[in-house]
Image (cartoon, rainbow, N blue to C red; front, side, top):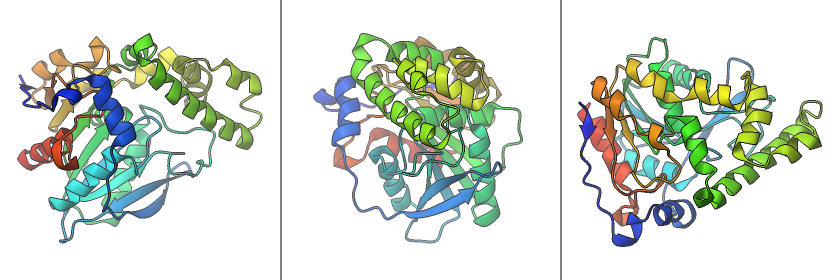
Amino acid sequence: MPILASNYNPPIPFKNGHFSTLYAGLVRTVSGLTQERERISLPDGDFLDLDWSYTPQQTRKVIILLHGLEGNAQRPYITGSAKLSNAYGYDACAVNFRSCSGEPNAFYRSYHSGATEDLEAILLHILNTRKYDEIFLKGFSLGGNLALKYLGEERTVPKEIRGVVTVSVPCSLYSSLKQLLQPKNYLYAKRFKNHLKAKMKEKQQLFPTKISDADIDKVKTLKDFDDIYTSRAHGFKDALDYYEKCSSLQFLPHITIPALIMNAKNDSFLGPECYPYKEAEENSSVFLEVPNSGGHVGFYGRNNTTYTEKRALKFFDGV
């Protein structure tokens, strides 16, 4: 029954979920990290960019970092994780999903919560071009859902993958969407929607026959975006079909390597179905930690190191 007690106890202001979320997203900065960009070709002819940082000593261990919705490899939760990982003997490969590295990807399709074919391509590239004996995955929000789905699908997972840590995971995409559409999350949802509509306008310039001005005008909510763009561009019937097929919850029973899910109780983005107590109780490889505080990808810690950054390395060292 790998339901883990949590000893995360932040200072009083950070016990508030919104304060924790906003501080991490808008205030926190991370300096002193040097990243080197590598562009890789995907099997379908598209590309994505990887931002590498290295430990001072040569190592055979690497952590692959997967960002959240409309994130990138320069977000503080990614650079903070990379910096601490490097200090503790791990190289770090920070992934920019398609269209997230500052340059639109080449195709009409983009990235989404279930695009495990891209993660598979990244892993095969690393295994074929680098000499790592141990590979670890760390995913945040959308990236966490992607990592868990990848591990639980019907595939042979490379033996080099030793463990995964996920933070603030919308294990049920529809449950998370319903939370995001509530008034308490209006400002977050509006910010996401505006970013995604801007991406739609970029796509319209490249593919004018696929996206009309009327399509863009119809996007009033995040669900509208998934109905009008995500589902059409990635082969789903509609938004609900996308949420159903890509939620990681259904894949958790099939995970066979150590996987830690850290979802705060006060994460306003997550609905009840995003806390997989039953799945963790029934699968000895799935560990669930639900701190009282943390917000969404928050988890403030002293010395500009978050709780989840330290917790992930402890988990990886123990697997």
